[in-house]
Image 1 (cartoon, one colour):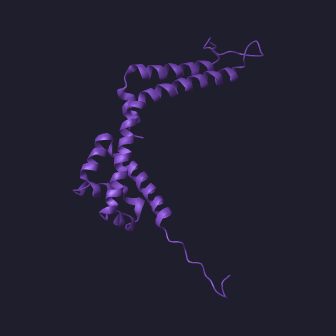
Image 2 (cartoon, rainbow, N blue to C red):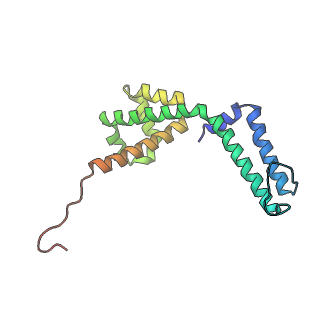
Image 3 (cartoon, helix red, strand yellow):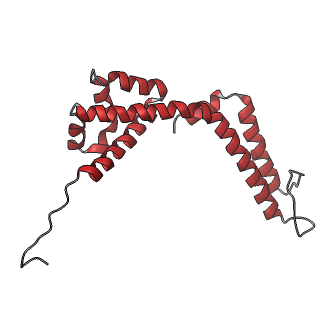
Length: 172
């Protein structure tokens, strides 16, 4: 999502340099430069180039996962709060009758417009503003789209009327 790029840019040199050094290790391995790198070979005196490159790549991806997790962990709480507020906003919009108009007008085609509708409503403006304090607009719209899809699925499961079954002598 749009939040990851600013986080990487704002994280400073340590994270960028660590990821760059991992990329350099993989490139070096692909070019046949075999360094110690903690790769252990069992059964052969030396691993094949393909196996060595694979082992170095796995190590680098594992370390990169740790770097990204450490980098994004502080933002997880913000995203989770924004998701909760967005779900509350959808429930409130339902109670105010705004959701009926959204689905009547075609649903998913106008999520950005529906977000503007929520911002314009005096009751929902504080919730929408809070979501925008936590996330960029593009991410807020995507989160609203997910919350609307969750709401629609829940509504279908809980309130959809079963189709009547034909009965009688002529029914198949």
